[in-house]
Length: 353
Image (cartoon, rainbow, N blue to C red; front, side, top):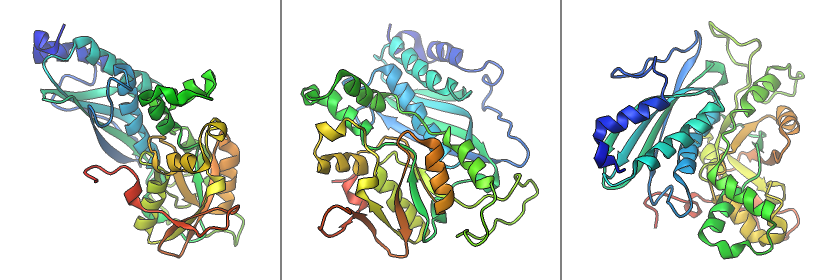
């Protein structure tokens, strides 16, 4: 059965089964936030042939990835999800089963975080396009922004990098799987098809930052009181997710904060499989510029950074330091070569050459 066989209303009737009946049915959804919270909104647009394809991604996985990308943006802002809306552009000959499986993937990801599809739109389009808008809430003192990095901050990543790009390469070029165990092969594929938004990091981060910092060891000014303060003032944290690669995240943070950084290449956490599967240079290229790992990249004082890495484990690491320089440098403590200057041009850019 194809979309044109059931029409817009028939498709909407099927898709409404994926939404809470008490929220949908009007011209807009009403989402209630708690007192003293800020509404956080993010939108991602995914296009067939650019962000997903039937060669590398099933409909279920495409749905999961789309939801995960938006939840990751909320996590990068320090927000917890409230709901999402889905805008879908479809050709008439797309199968109804494909669309329903897409929504199954979306809801499978959302269910892990007690989140729902609360509305959306469906239109005819010459190319399949998926646009998701996610709504979250955060305490004003717990919003993570890119422009809060301070000289001396440690740069923390919440997990390994390069796995998603490796999975994509394996899906596009199966012959590359030589020397990989079945377990490593499956793990890298899953890293690409089923990324995990790091919403789990936030309660750990807030708990650490709510603990008293020994006097004289802060490198941020105290936060002024608000009408609805948390249990104790929290330190500003700079950050974003690494959806476009680790290098992109650090560069974006530094540009917004007016600072520079030094990354230590030997400290960047990589999948274990890279040790015997890729050269050191290619492994770093995947980690820095591959993208879609959806880990958080956070800049915060060294003491809470150490504690965060210790509590997270599983590949979390301090990979560098914020500096007063205007450049972001990649240093290798085991090599004698000059530090490499990182740039945005090497990562994926829409409309790039």
